Amino acid sequence: QVHLVESGGGLVQAGGSLRLSCAASGTIFSINAMGWYRQSPGKQRELVAALRTGGSSNYADSVKGRFTISRDNAKNTVYLQMNSLRPEDTAVYYCNADIRRLGIKRNEGYWGQGTQVTVSS
Image (cartoon, rainbow, N blue to C red; front, side):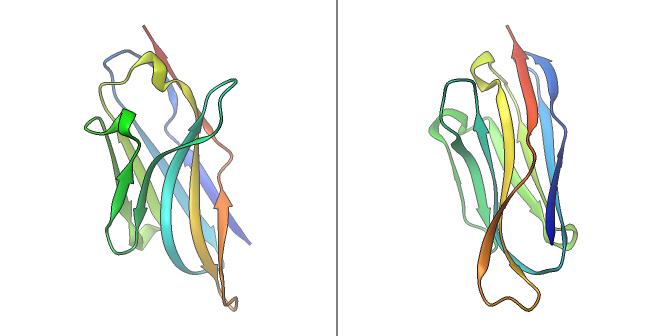
């Protein structure tokens, strides 16, 4: 089994910062990519940022220059530093990871439980 546990969400005023963390645990052989998605009421879940093992990353246009994704491979943890937050960043943020489990010859996608980020104006 593999589990993703997120932390770091909360309430912040516009212009403020938050740092999200997501730690993967379980019978992990390797992690190909980790990333963050978000979903607000009435909208589809959208990619915020993703980071691959080789170091390549991509960001949603709406967060470029404000959010930074990073990863600690030794801890199987991905972070999302969110600066200059705006009310439209309010959403539930989900961690996603592409993981190969021990003894399994394919990658599988896993999701965290989600963490609420609320930005007040």
